[in-house]
Image (cartoon, rainbow, N blue to C red):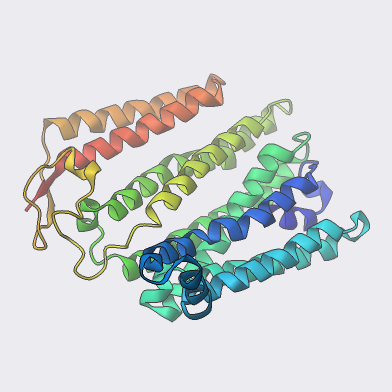
Length: 344
């Protein structure tokens, strides 16, 4: 999605970019492959009774997740053909058609989501908005970070992308709240199961994303206005790395059953949560918070790590160091919450 949008942006409002066609083709080809994972999961679940091929046929023709994947595959095939046969002289038409096709594929993925199975209208709309906002924001970020050949026109680029990014962040947060409300009965109590743990860690990684989004949107803008030779691309890449971690976490916990209905049993408790709380947990268990000395220690450690993240930017440390500091910050916040939790 980011490549299609950037092709529509005037060259004076962005850095020069070179997007390899094989990268676009790879993205289009892998879309239905990753979208097939929920289909495969259901197929393997019913295969012992009906056989693999019969189960696959039933899932693809009668289950919502299978029917939606059929349209995902069809849209992806058309997208691959569009990319393969696009001419360099028709960039605008190619970008518009590619963006429309990508939005259509997102709609098919939203149709097959957990949220739509619980509340069809709210689930599909919220999931589609979530996918679209993330794809626009992160897509542009990745293309600029890895396909830019220079950083000229950076201030012009920031003048429109900063507003777009914060708009996408708001849309992502709002749609995420709608999906969480549909999927999760109680957000805090869901931390006891794997889906809730994944959701919590994902949300914690959004903290450094917001931090570096502010850095890239405001501090970098100030530094470039004072020093035109300052290269902001490594910090764009760092933000992209953290977002990639969020995508990986999402991919892992998204295949888990959401904590909706009567989900809490002793066997369903997350092994990660068990590391901190080996109490007897049943359907009536809830989570409370009690501040202790460990809470305070991790709180101050988190503040220290934020300070080191700021220093790493101004000292022009490598993005590897900054990325590790971001991960340590998230770990510290996570540990602070886990040692503060009590099971009631």
